[in-house]
Image 1: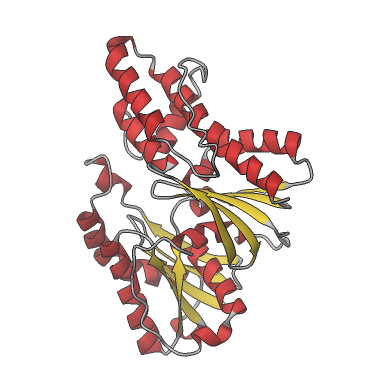
Image 2: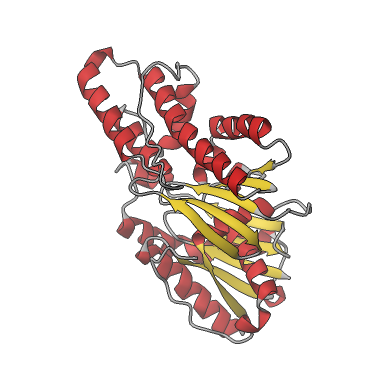
Length: 336
């Protein structure tokens, strides 16, 4: 079942063609990083205007690279929520129009479930449930128990800044360009992760996360240290504080719910130190539990292939829901 998918939840315009939820035939991403680097973050109106310019050429390129015609497409998937509302509207309006004109099934997808299903792309191995998933990026931070396809229980989320957002803000504080995650990770390789004693918000009452206190601690250090600040040590210490808490909560959940697999997803899942630390702690605490993360870095960040994967398994679970065209509406709601 070939699905054409569209992703415009934030600042990446993406379209993909994916066969049966796993085989990626194309995954085209038009990045806006250079555009938003000038302002140190995403300006919603600027992002939306760029989506308008890029979306049709990106869709055409995705079909061309997949060597697939629009007539051969079985369904259209689109990110409907959550995200920047102006950006989402570009994607949903385009998908609605294409599906109506072409008489195609249309499948709305939650962006976060898209990240979760990035771990199904480009391999045929059977994934064993239950799975505990940590999906974490600039806009969201979720710890999820997955008991089956599209059977999710939210265990915890961020109470303030998401980890990726904290990376971006701390990068700005120490003079690194946007986006901050890759820049801090690169600088941290030259630093001492014990160079600065930074706080960890454990939040003992559950699986929620908090990174605002850590960000504030970094801000105070930058102000107090001035020219004496060792940026590489601070980058390494900050990164270690973030991944320490993420790994701790993830392993605790895997133990409590007897997970057969643990998955990392979202932009921060590309962080090599996070992958390393989770694997080390899994080996020690849950040696029979498998760790997975997306096969390619491009599947960690926002992309349309993951949206097609999520849509395919939604359709398989309830095909009658998508038999007739429906008007997909954009929303900022987070719920699965």
